[in-house]
Amino acid sequence: MLLVYTHKITPRFKYTFKHICKRILGLEVSFTSKIEDFIAHNSLKMSYAKQPLSNELFVRSNALLFENGLSDLDINVQPWGNTKGFFATGERSDLPFDIFAASFYLLSRYEEYMPHVKDDYGRFMAKESLAYNHRFLQQPIVDIWAYKLKVVLQKRFPDYQFPERTYKIQPVIDVPAAYYFRQKGLLRTVGGTLNDLSRFNLRQLYQRYLVLMGFKRDPYDTFRWIIRKQKTCNFKFMVLFLIGDYSTYDKNINTNKKQFISLIKSVADYCDVGIKASYFALDDISILKKEKLKIESITNTDLKAIRHSFSKLNLPTSYRNLVELEINQDFTMGYIDTLGFRAGTCTPFQFYDLDYEVQTPLQINPYQCLDFALLKYKSELDKTEHLKKLIEEVKAVNGTFTPIFHNYSLSDLDRWNGYKSLFNLVLESAE
Image (cartoon, rainbow, N blue to C red; front, side, top):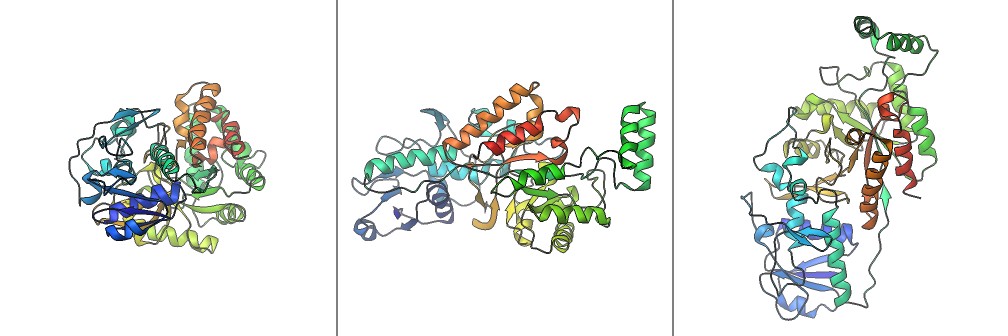
């Protein structure tokens, strides 16, 4: 067990050390502010304060983990080997940067509470982030820092056997629309037909009626393929269905339709199932609660996980609503148009509420790759290379790779040509 001495044990301090030491390095960790307890401990130990006690392993602390609320931080990002660091510590420290304060800044999404420019949907974009602007967005920097700490600990305590974690993948299938043509109802089908005619899109019109008459499978109906893939894996896919009411933003099938309910149940027999919260559920907890109860009545199990429509997060409100409804897993932490590590880590972590200064039970599963972000790479080769590079970054720290594909990106539609191969590449990376 690692014992950490500090002058003041705060919620921020405990939260950050537990993520780095327990979740990433697999080390049990405890804390003390009593010097005699620290001296008596005869296993791994380090101090985290302004000054070392004697000649122990020491990391000089930044003030961030001992503060409350938000302040305008002066952050100076500097090179550190093959990565970057900030919150420099000085000569006496065994690490040149306070990785704990820096990790807290990234994990708590401190910068997303500060004034920033949002996009048309009100989202925090990659270009606003410290990681993007200082070119470390493509690295799981918190995990890299944790491994740098491990090297220092191993040098100081050579006889200690450190646990090893293994690389994992956690594929997510997002289902905003289960079918392209089927189960839409008379009004939407007539509207779609008129739209095809007005745009002289005769190819789509022909395909629409082949599907409606049962001669061809709906292009968005990739669920047999998904289940077939699931059967070959010893880990579960997370499939998230949009079940909110029809609106300008959300256009899935009505949950009163037996075929849609049957689809959700059949997928739930093989995969983990959760919900894609509707656009209006983002700001209205009563709508979110209704959707939670609806999926639970279909699957007859407690809701496992959620992801917000349009990858939109309103911090801290979005996550507080999940905590209040006892939804314990989220898959919204990532960027829609950029590959990388929004929170700096590829290890699931707890949501820390900066306003209340408390760690919550909500586990955030950060994703590193959304299928839409790969569209900007024109060739299949480019897409494959960027995906491989991302996987290698996660493998280097034995983290969890979480890609998000949509049911329709695994179809044979022209826009998504080659995406089945990319999904297979992800699955093969776990072998």
